[in-house]
Image 1 (cartoon, rainbow, N blue to C red):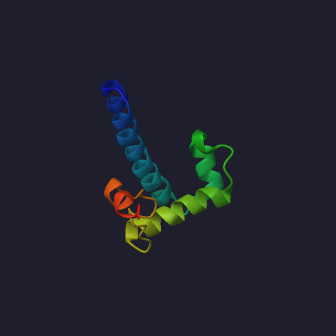
Image 2 (image 1 turned 90 degrees about the vertical axis):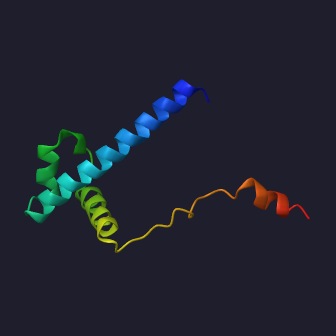
Length: 90
């Protein structure tokens, strides 16, 4: 991967993470204030086509992650490193 591609990828991941956190915060705040999923959909055009269950599920899972009720280990989908592959050749 070229250095330009790596920079673009890093930028995309950084802004994507920021949009995820910011979006969840806004939607969660709205839900806590009593705004329904249907109302959120009319406020935020990007939610068009998403069901109430999808919107509420995103908010609920996000809330549980933020509150520490859900912990997804970073190793859940990790690939084994090269040294462990070397040790298992026997």
